[in-house]
Length: 269
Image 1 (cartoon, rainbow, N blue to C red):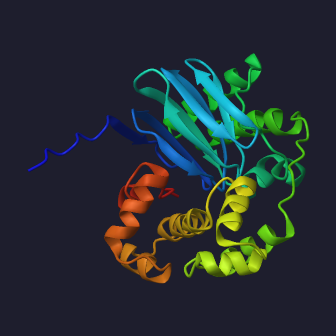
Image 2 (cartoon, helix red, strand yellow):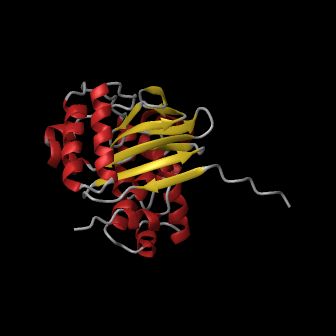
Image 3 (cartoon, rainbow, N blue to C red):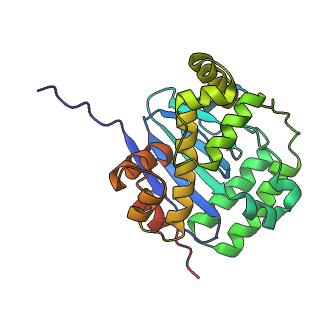
């Protein structure tokens, strides 16, 4: 019998939930994460080690002490540079950003590259400390200051628009993510041979059609789980083979099992 490969070091701590639409997570991991995107704004700090990521704007490397950032729907991956790495993040829903900072901020982008402004790091540390203490008023003040500086001062970023064929495929996937199109259907929508369509889609979006549909399903799953829907119902409603399939996919995307994620994201009144 072939011996099992040991699981890479991977420890995740979910912070206490004290504000609706806000999550904190601390990760110590040797794992590499496949290309994915979040539907939240994220700001964090690398606490130890190094992290290398592919992004839509090129390769990004962050080391200990660097501030890291991600915008909603910004495709990226991640791998350790020197052994395991430790990072701490706060994720905030766009509608929460709009409430805290204003709707003009919620449509801006942080940019994936590390943010070097010393003042941003100070505000981020204040926010993380308040969230760790579950001090909701202090956390809301700190997050408002943090994201107003990070977003309102951010330089506008122009993104290349996908081709018309890719847009048609994206629309089809977004309409029915639980029934993702076959590669033949993607090719018909894009008016290209299967191989060319697959390459064009991945080049323009950063993920294959199947992987992109899975990400949408997992984001919908995250929201449903947070709202209290049972894991069995989430799996059934979103087209997973069973609850185990949902759990495996959820862990690959978010780093934690869905049941643990739900228990950590119940905001106490």
